[in-house]
Length: 336
Image (tube, rainbow, N blue to C red; front, top):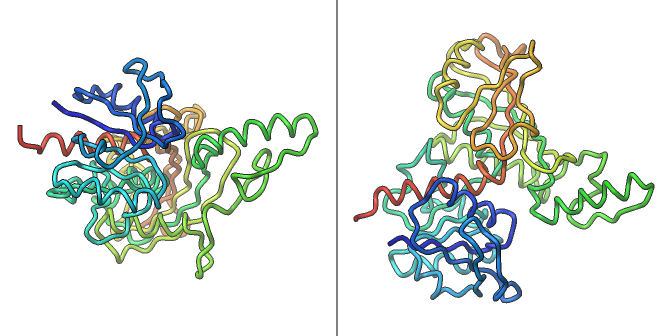
């Protein structure tokens, strides 16, 4: 008997979590959908059939074996420790609330599954970090990364369902020559790119950019790994892309990197420029694997460096899929 609760079930990430649980045939015996009082009582169409949304309470969440949190950081900060306070419910938190706490593991199962042994509260990484990490970890294992430079191209859905709606409505209005107010993004997103995601920090980087730095170092278990990021919002609906430059300790060639990546879990090499085949949001959308391509020698760091391009569905690899993979890994280690 495995009972799973999804908190924030009516949001974009919550809906994806339900879809992934079903698609991967997670062996749940009961699915509990929890949300705000405003959504309570509503009927929700899911892959498991029509389900009624319940008002969140700590007690109801504690009745579950696993709770997937698709809520704000402030909500998780208040309630996640209360839920795990019963000593048995596993909480997998998609917010940034606990990612940087020393005693809370930040997990991508293909990389550092063992970090969550004996832990009930587990943090899901930022979507941008998770997508990059899938491609970078195998290269780190074989060639030892020294420096990572990332430029992101992040879809509107990174800001949730409201972000996608603002892009769609704004695009329609813009095509009709009308002005559409921007409420989700710092500036109008249609026909624009915005080099501003999350709040600016004292060092001139945004918090989104620093998340990539902090989280990559924590997941890889290497605080000496130098990392820099520029995060940019672009007018696509779904799937983030990233241009990444790496410097390695060992010499690395595109051919050697492709060989490593071709057998890496959660990675699909898409790299045939002659056939116009390379990673794109259009092809990465709704895909579990992260696409990696445009692999070439870095003109700056060669022979110990590469440039590459990745695309990944941030609602899946960067959120829902990663959370379900964590739950699967925890379930395997639970006493029967």
